Image (cartoon, rainbow, N blue to C red; front, side):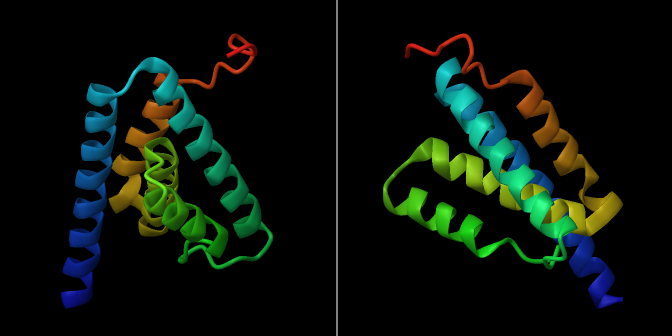
Length: 124
């Protein structure tokens, strides 16, 4: 029974963290910065999904993603940090299943709101 509440508590914390990150990023950063965050998060999620479908442990964030997160934090790269954090949260939420689905939906909605516009800004 403790494990059930632990899993539910973990899901609630992930949902809160997701909403906090998205809300603070949207309040603090310009559109181009938000698009950079979503481009990084999307790239990280797609790469991790490919590794998981290839047999990697879905319950653990890949080493390269943890290192990207650590490097972004160390170098004060806010876009890199938010992108990696959202990707890690997305992967953890997927493992939690239905309990983590609201976090996945919030991240997917954020990615949809701020699509990468590299084609439009190829000169910048």
